[in-house]
Length: 271
Image (cartoon, rainbow, N blue to C red):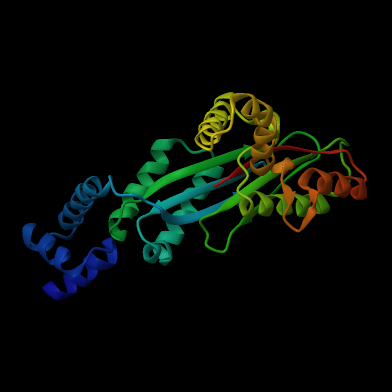
């Protein structure tokens, strides 16, 4: 077999560039297996060099099994790589492992095997895996058209089997779209961490003082400011994206009444 044929075969096996394949074969006296090992080692070294680079592009994938719904965000450096078939397949495979509750080492090994071929830093930025809740429960999800923003919402019914899981699923998907579109961070006001509220209070106080407002006025305004912050950032408190006259909670309760069940949003996640 000629060097050109060896290079072609090595490229097919590893996805490495032509010059890298030529060098690998020359360094290893034409031994294909040693050349593959050489390129893998080089790939790992290149990955270490790239590890500090930001991975703000990428792809979110949501996978469901009989008892688990998982969402993962695989990050890379450029939008170009994020749209390649190789990266998309890797993102799908990583999401499958997340849905199977695979350990971190197994996921890292998969990324390490494929990332050198992509030529960029690739990282698992976020992941969620939910076991199906007991009783009548559904998880709905939404992925934005850019494939970088997504959410999933779990809704539980008070009945053992209400027979309306399709409508519940649609409702959960609508709330997922709401969470992405309005950038919800928490489910309800009670879920906002104390330190977050304290930080907001600190920022508002500084702003108000810079505007020359007296301490007494600031104190009176503070509850309203914090309430507004929660209304903007808590999913159930937000204005409903399709009807600003309603809050999400109002819309949800109306839909629950129409479905004929006592429904509750038990959790949500947004990337």
